[in-house]
Image (cartoon, rainbow, N blue to C red):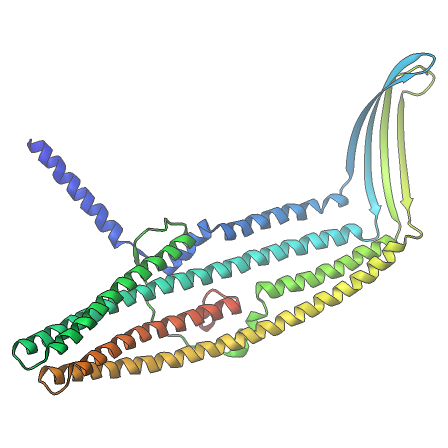
Length: 422
């Protein structure tokens, strides 16, 4: 029996340790980004796509190397005498000149590889932005839960004072009822905040590959202190964004396509050597083996389509150039607008901080006045409600500032703005 209780005691201690360790775990932003890199399917797909395009780029080297072909054929002929033959052929060929076709194709393969690499970088920036939004939104919801707990405590304190004053006959029953309504509203708001926090965690869990109902703490702060870099500096960096690089590569592809179209106007030279061996047959005087070496020159004198293809490639180059210019225009506009959003969010945060100080002073004054009978319950309830709104407005302002910073980082194409000031 003693060993039984000892086993239970050890089990309880082990279980307590597990609960303590799990509850002590706190997810950081960097850990969330790392988990998303490992688990987010869209990002993993972009990396696989790069490997696929790398293989195609390696394949574009083939025309620069000799080609070796082997064939075997079996024939049965029915003439005055029935007989069969079997032929073995081995051919080695090499392209001496093709008007720049293979060079253009290899350049295009290299540019396509660069485009897919930039697409993977774009997916990484999108991943980091989505993680930041989900992470800080969950953190804001967590702080909202804490603030609504304080809101509930204040409402309970107001209700207790109203009940006490009513018992001593210095307050009306309506005071107690007003305080009760506010108390129940505070309970309702807390339940809503707890539910919103769970939903915010589920969105974060979906991105980092955890079970949707996983519960854990979040390590971070909504308070940031950053000196915003010069707008022109951010604009210059933004012109190196993956989308801009992709557009520049697309312009180079259009130029290579023009070279590809021009290659049709040049002759092609092919060197080939072959070995052929025939077994069987009725003609014993024919040579059973043949060895040949030759150079073949092919030049298309006229084919209507190649003229229009060359003309089309010139237009496509112009289209790519204009698309690049328009993309740069939009990028610079996005940087300008998001920069202004960040400044606006920063200024609104300063006002929200001042409003909270005023709301705290207002509530403290209203509570003291009501407690000694110099104010009515409506003034106290309104002051407490304004204080709750000010607290939540401060959280919302902090979140908006962080999200505007995250969006600016995404638009500029960097991981952290802090890296520019180092």
